[in-house]
Length: 270
Image (cartoon, rainbow, N blue to C red):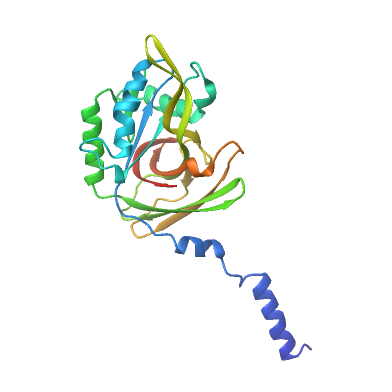
């Protein structure tokens, strides 16, 4: 028969190596501060061949995100530049951009046939800039269905991005959490007018990676008010990418038939 001290020692060893171990993952999410603000998710479909893309990017999209556009609160605004085609230079193309374009093309209310085109949430406004800005303002003034908090851990070329979502209302459809990696500035070719090509054009907020899928990972239950959901997405950054120039953009979608039907909220982390 084992003595009492031996049993105590075995129990301590079991707790240390087994079921009593502290869950450090939970500790990470316990430290994340969740914002209840409703932020707006915007994006611009562009191509390098169409010089009107330069007009929208430099005159509308970039100023809105930089906080220099009248009537737009940049503190609650996040976005990315999408290149669905491979005109001139394929290095800016992503399959995610193509999936976003396909999503609009398959929706008769939002379809478009040419670039550039500017969007808020899942609504395409084409070149209707005033309507686009009004939509941004409307979203930001509407109470959010959920709040988002983020943190990250860097391990060499790997970055763990932690996303915590608190739900304030019931959601009666499936929900996904998507993470996009956006590069603050990329120098690449751009035709800026019919007779001028800029080979070192500074494209800003360029989508680079979609590490957990084009529209994210589904939450496998219908979220209820007062509940939380969290996920950690591991991002591998090739050596040519400077981590200081990247932004991590989290978007919470309401889903339907494997495609987003609305954006519930978004947040960004440098």
